[in-house]
Image (cartoon, rainbow over all chains, first blue to last red; front, side):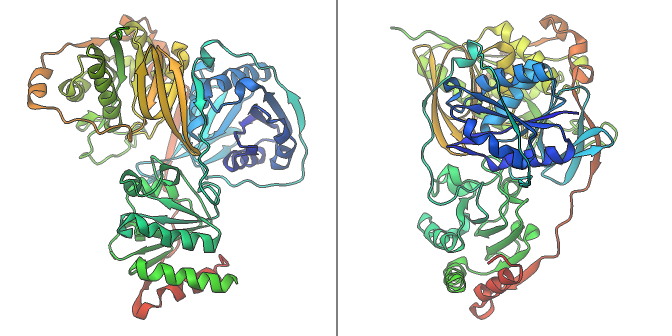
Length: 319
Length: 265
């Protein structure tokens, strides 16, 4: 068996989710390679050996400078056809979902998405896909190779180990129609502090905050804990907080070590974005809020009282 | 220069109605679709955007393209009531159970027949949480693709999109024809007016078989699919949870105590 993992980069760094998928892949298959596709990405190649890649393919070209999917489909399609990979795996993001689906059409290959884990059953690869609002886990598979998979963001943790990878450049030849969509302005708006997908601690706010100003309470707590602030769909829609911080089905999927939900009722749309968090603490004045059903610690009380106190105590504790 | 009339295709899926309790059929291991159906809520945002583009251009055609059982026409009627001009439903027993590869082969063939300037998708299926269809369709049609559109402007034969990603907003431009998937933040879909509802039944609702589209039956349905389902499992249970009442205002202390015990501080 041989496996290829696409490692997405952003501002000179490999994304954590992709490294998690790479680690998992190399646990399942000794013959695991990674592919980088971008501009100036060669610098990232050496490091990927420590996440389990035995070989790293590098498509480093200015034409791949913008995070657009179609040129990457061209690069991956050629590489997969040339090397005959059995599995091609992606950590799901806005970009990789489009790359994986484009590749599926190009290669007439099966794509399973929203997987939270991958297993080997003998020599059969099995994907684990939650369904019906995560009430059930569906075992999914492939009838042919290559097998394509998108892994839900934050499902798999990177594991670093000893290891080096051979680095090999790949040719970049793009289809004319793959280059018609062009980036005029690339996202540069970086939120302060760690982005929510990379953060170990997240403090999330919902409608229960009462008004947008109250997000400052959460920002103080997040700062004290060295974490980031997230928001629910409802408050983002209401314009209280930026979309980039939205957790949920139509926002980000996060899996921090600690998730503190303040004034979040816990609709299913929110749950699917944060349920793989390590420890969940919910603060809500409604004792019947659904969030308590999937919290490790449920605090019934007024967040406006509790959060500032908590911030103070954390500051004292951490000196 | 006069704006040319746009021809828009909106790809729409029939999903189980929100009032139906969703279940997976233990025999087929697929979602039970025998109950009432409805137009996928996310797709109404794509249709709304298409209708607005037509209205701002003054003329044009908005065509709903879908694949599903014959009865899916009932669900599509909501789209006609909102203002779409007609429906093309690909319906064929041989297409049942199609996965991504098979579905997009059929949809691409249907879209190709319409020769649209713009193909719009909603951001996901409410039944499968799938958010991948458009990229496969665009690849098959060899058309440029932009997804997660938070806003869309069309002028001078070009589409300009604000794309939401994990990192913020990109601005991407593409010449037409193009495939664009819109987010549900892009607009607030209109409710069908009474006049629209009354007129919907009279609008053209065409169906096409796989043979009509020149798609081999072996390329659709289970036979044309490259993925399969092996079985169902229960999700891992969560551990016992702790309840804290904020008695005497000591909840913050208790949280810190818990975090310290768990070595999270």
